Image 1: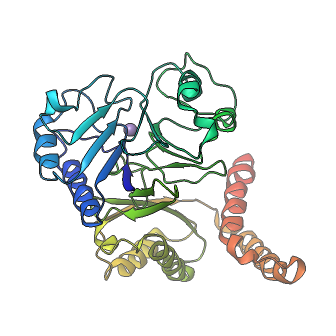
Image 2: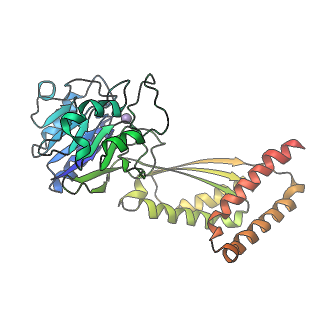
Image 3: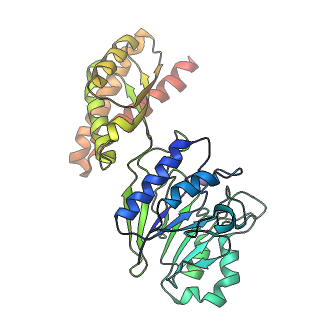
Length: 357
Ligand SMILES: [Mn+2]
C-alpha cells in the first residue's frame, strides 16, 4: 500500500493560506491514487481547533482516510476524531498504533517528558518491533548525546534507540526546516507550510510504500517559498556574475516547483566593500526581469579605510592564485571555496586587524 506522510501543517482559523495548502496536498495525493494520508504531528496550531475548516476540507475527500498522529501542538486526546469533527475519515492517533491495513508502519504520537525509546521499550514485547522490517512515524527529533527527560517540549529518539528497535526508516515531524537525511535512516518531513521565514526551500510530503518501505517525495506546489543568500562583494564588476551564479543555484534547487520564481521570497544579505549606490543599481537591474514574490535586501557596508585598499587587492590576488593552483596541486577544485575564503579572510581582517589599530 502507498500512503502519504506530511507534517506540521499548523492549521489555524486565522491562517487561511495554511488551510488552502493542506487542501492542495489532499487533492494532489488523491490524484496520485493514494487513499491513506498520515499527518506526523502538529496538525493544528493549538486550541481553539479550526474544526469547521477541517470538516469542510477533509469532508471534500471522502476517498481519503486521514490519520493525525498527535504532535506537541495538538495536545493529547481524541480531538480530531468523529465525535469532535464529525467525519468518519479523520482519526486522531493518541496511542501507539500500526497504520490500519499494515503490521509494520508504527504511528507514535508525541508524549511529554519521555523519549521515544522509553515508549518503544514499553510496547516492543507486544509488537515485536525489532524482529521485523518496520517504519516509525512520529513527532520529535533525533538527539545525539545525553537525553534530559525533564527537558520538556520535545520527544527525542537517540542512536541507541535506533540500534535497539531497528526501524528500517524513521519519518519525523517537529523539525520544520527539513527535509534532511541522516545516515541513521531518519528523515524529517519539514513543515508543509513555512510558518517562519527560516523554513527555507521546497516544502514536500512523502509517499511511502508499506511493502518496500521506500520513500518518494512530492513537492508542495503552493504557499510561499523562502530562501536566504549571503554574498560579500569586493568588486562591483563581479557582482553581476555572482548574482547569475546565485540564480543558477536557486534554479537547480527550487525549479522542481513550476512556479518557484513567483513564489520566491528572497532574503539577500550583502556585505559590501564597494559603493552602496552601485551595488543597489546592479541588483535592481538584475531582478528587473525576475518577478519574484519579494526581495528583501540587507546591505551592510564594510568600512575599509582607503589606505588599506592596496592590501585588500594583494589578499585577493593571493586567494586567486591559491585557488587556481590548488587544482593542480592537490587535484581539488578550490574555486568553489574562493568566495568563502575571501569573505572569511576579509571579515577577519576588518574585525581583528583594523579594529585593533
Ligand atoms: Mn511544529
